[in-house]
Length: 507
Image (cartoon, rainbow, N blue to C red; front, side):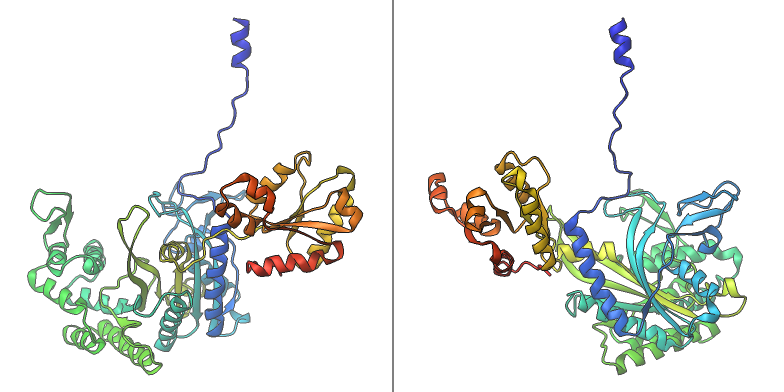
């Protein structure tokens, strides 16, 4: 019994576990993100946007539609109460914090105010494959301009960004619509007023399916509903908006995809002739189309697409999405269609909540994490791990100062370098460590080399190539591939030669 009691008192080891919906990222992924972000930043700055940073947390009421209820803020955001019992939330996107920043600094900022920012956002949603609770976005916004020229510029910048990231023309498209057109459609079929909010949402969800379903299937969603299996009783049932056939005809006529933007505009003008808000949306779309065409952006890059809905409720005018058109396969050979990797629109009411006066704004957000996954699968990102530092080994324990001096010389020359800080007893372990660090080369100096004023440089990259080609261990020992001596005073120059030979960036 005493032995059992003693065993039960043994402390439990804490289990290392990653929270659901999050991911750890290593050097290769971080390197790829850094490369992406720099390319996006270069395009945004080319368009005159300047950086701004906002915190990862905001007062919950500043986030717009996500307001606290009696017990805690609505689902969708991660929230907590601070010591004065005010609700604070992790940012859901980068737009709502910008609206707060602009309102708070309104008089000090130039108008229009053009800014960009990137960082992680947080969604309190059920995680799934490729769906994380923390992911990176990169936004650009113009605040203080009501002209559709600001929206057109955002669309052109989105197209240029895709090409800067290596996505060829014809493999992406920026799709543009206007929420006023959609509001005009809803008005034309009699779904105005608060009483019809639920049915309006059902209609918008049906329209959003037009890029996935045939129009006949969407007609079912606009009418009585749709069975996923195609026949009654098969699969799950999605309740429809219960529109009449005539009203469904109007919705489908306005939202039908057309090859020429002029045809899309003409259809909207015809069916929304009696809708003031609908006509305003049509006029804005027409101006955007003319502006991008005048700047040399054809319909293969930017096109009017009446099916674009966008989910967030604060959009008030033009809305846009960037869709990747490439089909590829995942690691198991299954077909993958990436779809939307970014989007945005006009949100004229968001800053106004803080100001009590109209403040027009429009913006665009790239889903960096999602786009990085797409670019990696398409082979447009270098996902190889970066080479590590040059490792200076410790051959004689009492000469650590000499080895540290070599490290300092390499660093002063702009070359990444480190001294081996583990147990120096076994040289083989030191070389294994350098391999695991993906080091391009190691420096070795024993007492004999020191007496001659020399060092040994072992080229690990060349050595790995030679090892693959040599079958005999004896032959390996005899040839000692990729290892050579040089004068101690030539250390920096010879290491640079090794790095240059393998195109390793060193400074």
